[in-house]
Amino acid sequence: MTEMLRAVRGMNDILPSESERWECLEDILRSWLRSYGYRGTRTPIVEQTGLFQRAIGNATDIVEKEMYSFEDALNGEHLSLRPEATAATVRMAIEHNLLYPGAQRLYYIGPMFRHERPQKGRYRQFHQVGVETFGFSGPDIDAELLLMCRRLWNDLELDNIRLELNSLGSLPERHMHRQALTEYFEKYKSALDQDSVRRLRTNPLRILDSKNPEMQTLICEAPRLIDFLGQESLQHFDNVQSILTASGVSYQVNPRLVRGLDYYNLTVFEWVTDKLGAQGTVCGGGRYDGLFEQLGGKPTPACGWAMGMERLLALIAETRPIAPSNRPDVYLMSQGDEARRFAFVVGEKLRDGGVKVVQHCGEGNFKSQMRKADSSGAVVAVIIGSEEVLTRQATIKPLRTPAEQLRVPLDAVAQFVTKQINGF
Image (cartoon, rainbow, N blue to C red; front, side, top):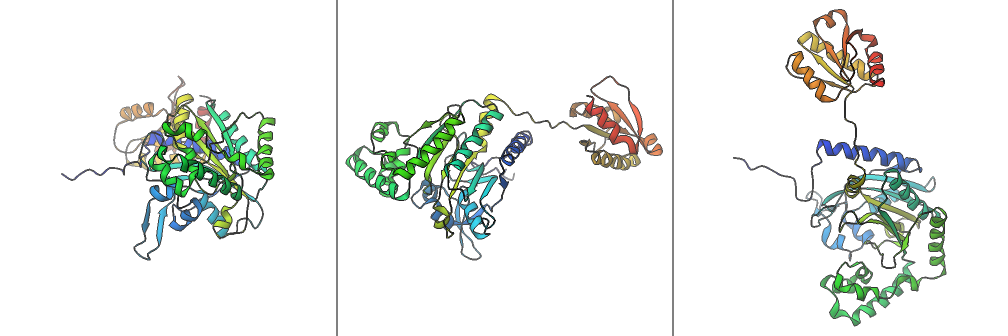
């Protein structure tokens, strides 16, 4: 017997009932994003590996351990499945001169890939909705990104997400802090775990993000980045906070919040919850003003965030399940070859009028077809038999009201059915 093939571990099938929930959420997200003036983009799933090495940083866990990378057998290019979309969106903006007409507000929805240990809320193929803003240098766009998230939580009736903020300052300020961190942790090197010892040589700021409970006291007493910030960085951070306060957004300044990617500067933030266990970050992002230059473009201020779709859906299921309506308006039945052919004509007439139609395919008498019509959830059944073919009419049978069935001319069938549906 041939062995059954299965999906790759950590890359999940989304079945029809679950896919309907995804589509419903995506519709909500696109409408919300457009209400703030954001426009959709799509970048390739595969990019040059060097893009992520330059943007994310060689010393990050993503580049060191988690990317799906390979060599193209045809031309020897080093390619990777995208582990995140910010670098690709910046690359796209540079390559196509997107900022020529002015500053841009962009969004994307799509799959990302990281070779992590699969667990609830963390998969090897996962999906993100994200926004990227290019050309806005002030704290107002940072605040807009946070206010729009607050609106989404309200729209989805999610009241268990809190905002944490920090500032990473400028590159020179981070260098001073990094030196202080290195000197501090070197004194306590024997107390560091294996990952932190490695990060001490490559990116000591990431030690602050460690979840190892045995290191928390040591981390809490480490030098704080905010103490190394100059007046300009502090003013930017203060202005972001003042807008949030004026708009009634609750937040907490978390000096240990560093994010996992090297390209961030100034404002960084996470929306977190206690409802999803260890995978508590629902949305994260911040400002990355140096990334355009890093990837060969002109100096361009930039800010954005990304949100995990799987985690958002899980959080919604905890509080307010999305219940998309996949019910058809009409179940279209027929019997006999001529009736079946005419039923296709009737079905297209109905769809021309904006009616959702499921047409019976296969054999079965009218009694068995009526059972399927009833179980489909349709509001009405449209019946085509030999009499209907001769008279170019369709019989309409209400399924959810006691009204009698009627025969309606073909040209009037969509209008008549629409009234039946709207009256239900």
